[in-house]
Image (cartoon, rainbow, N blue to C red; front, side, top):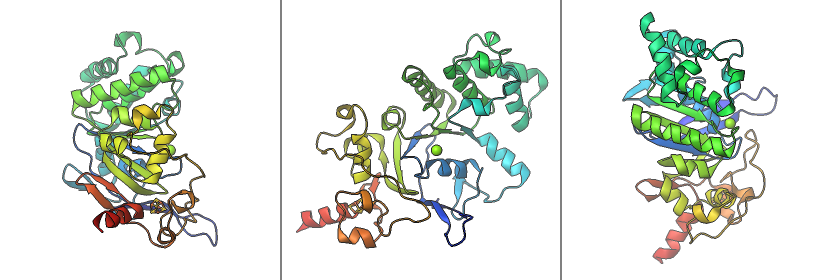
Amino acid sequence: MNLHKVFNSGVRGVGGIRAVSDVTFTLQRRSVVAIVGESGSGKSTVARLIAGLLPPTSGQIWLDGQRVPQRMAFHQKRQHRKNVQMIFQDPFSALNPYYTVRYHLERSLRNLVQVPKAEIKARASEALESVGLTPASDYLDKRPHELSGGQRQRLVAAQALIVEPKVILADEPTSMLDVSIRIGILNLMKRLKDENELSFVFITHDLASARYISDYILVMYAGRVIEYGKTDDVIDEPTHPYTRMLLAAVPDPKRLRGERNERIPLVGEPPNLSQLPSGCHFHPRCPYAMPECREVMPVDHMLTPDHKVACHLVKSQEAAANV
Ligand code: SF4
Ligand code: MG
């Protein structure tokens, strides 16, 4: 899909903000792709582009073999929103404190799908039960503040599920939850994917959650994909120095890191997207930076048919191995 998004910075003399450059990946049915990176890496922008909440500057999104129009008419937007639902980090912001659980669910359904009145009630209860809020009758008349953080996130998941989407984009859905509740939400996502033929894009800065839930991991840095592959391959054989830095920052790296990779401490800050460093955007933070890294943007290098990495190091290691 080669997605690009440039925001106008609104500041005279400062160019566009390259939030996303050349992001391409395929999401298979019943699979989870985790998009991982620090804040400001462009992960949320990718989600918003896929959700149709922002039009891409260039590039295309395809869903089930059909191209999603770049600028959508009202009925197309509605259809796209039914197919691609988004769950945000903060369930409170997605819920209206004055309305009941029942109202939230029925509203999501009515907004996007034509359903006979008699069926609406049944669908609301079914959605609650499928996210583990059982019996539904205990929850239907509650308001958001009467639910715990984990229950609110389940309600938001039920709101997404009730319209029977094909894809759910979950933007840091567990980052505001306690660790004990987090695992419950991740397990819920796993189960929903298998039971409902759903695909998930799971956005997170937490590699441990990404490993737990995803089939593929896409690592973003400064708006670009710097490594992408099957989750086990990326975790066991992290190749890009940035991926290795992220893994080194995980509290229990032994479980997560391949033994062969030495630790690289995560140092420095992500760059300002309106003044990206030349060449490899990561070079100011990279302990392996070579002169060429300051000048030439690395291209994707296929390590295996499903594991790619954009780093000059890979190329020079291969060249050295071939001598
Ligand atoms: Fe580091 Fe160079 Fe690879 Fe960029 S291209 S990650 S600077 S070695
Ligand atoms: Mg974000």
